[in-house]
Amino acid sequence: MRQRLTIILTIVVIVGLLVLLNAVTYVKEQKTGDSEFSANRSTYHAGPTGLRAFYDYLSESGHKVIRWRESTDKLLGMSGDSVRTLVVVGRTQLPFTTQEASGLLSWVDQGGHLVVIDRDPQPELLPRSGKWQIAATQLDLPSFDLDATDPNQMTERVTALKPDQPSLLTQQVQEVMPSRFAARLKLVTSESSGTPVEYEKHSLAPKEVAIDSDEVDHAPVIHIEDRNGALLVDYTYGTGRITILGDPFIVANNGIRLRDNLQLAINLVTNGDGLIAFDEYHQGRGITQNEFASYFSGTPVLAIGAQIILLILFIIWTGALRFARPLPLVQVDRRSSLEFVASMSELQERSRAYDLAVENIYARTRRVLARYAGVDYNSSRSEVASRVAKRSTIDAHSLETLMRQCEETINGEPTTSRQALDLVRRLREVERTLGLRMRSRDARQAVENI
Image 1 (spheres, rainbow, N blue to C red):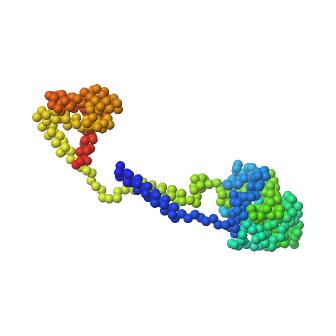
Image 2: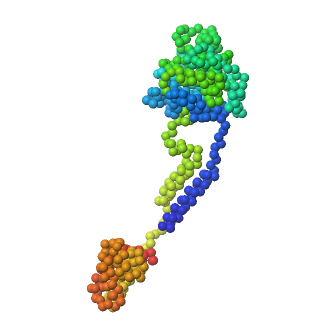
Image 3: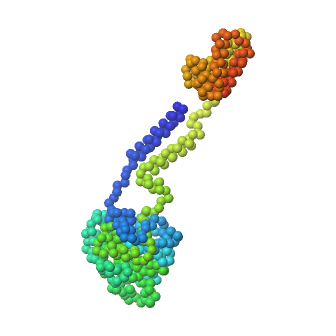
């Protein structure tokens, strides 16, 4: 037991040292300020670049809106049957893979509405519409020292833009205020060999490009633009539509309250019936398969748990290994003990010292009975017998009588060999009934003393 206690204490000390080491070396990550340079476009984020205000407004105003935390491939399954509009805002934390983009476009082709709000959208999300291709150009880039909470810095030297023509996307919108980092969208055709084509005001056709009526049906529609290019464009794709807005500032917490930005944001996502889903999966907020690990993520708890598991595995692995030379088993010299017993028996039989033989056995039996009864060795026979009887099936009177007869024999009462053997037999019967196993214990003690 002492050896096991030492092992347990050693493990506890090692675990305590590991905990202390992790606590000392753990450095809490300092939260960096929100900025346009590394924007967080999640609807969970309440900072200036987040979309928490827009999402909460839609939810509280009665619109059917959810946070989509699964892969966009799920839109083609049962879980995406009720979704009619998917909103992807900004450069996502996890880029769309080719397979995800293909599945998303298949969902749009079947009647879905994809809204992309980004200054540099992934080309995989903007497929061709007939011969037309959308290209984005950013006029200015955010700096590290830009204060995203200051509207003056965000809109420095920027003029509010008015809609080009009345449409469902621009209804009740007088003018919108983009940021100075807003991208401008250009249209490219296969005839122009990839060169951006400038548009005339209120015209769907580029200058000096001959197009037929079928191409006009597929041509993207410009809703808001200036001399640098379009800010809001949408076009059909299959039986669905794709809408592109070149500035997340318009729907973000730091810009949605300016001019008619909120109204434009509402028009973008509510242009149609059904559920509105904001993509949170690619913002790094996807559903995790292990909520426990997710809860303790960023803390030293997971590292401590991993170290404890490694420690337990190490103990199990080393439990069957030998770390020293093999030692032979202890050889018990049984011959000497048996010879001693045989000699003592022969002497007692020749001298007819039956009382001595009974005394040798009874003394040990009485000591064990007293321990079994929970009393002192010198307690009376009646007390020992009654206590033993209470804890076993032995009759108290019979046990007391046996103890009295043994003590009378020890004190000089005449006895024969037959009577002595009967007393010893009855004592052994008491040992077996109580499960004392005195012979096994005596043999074990004899081995340990050698």
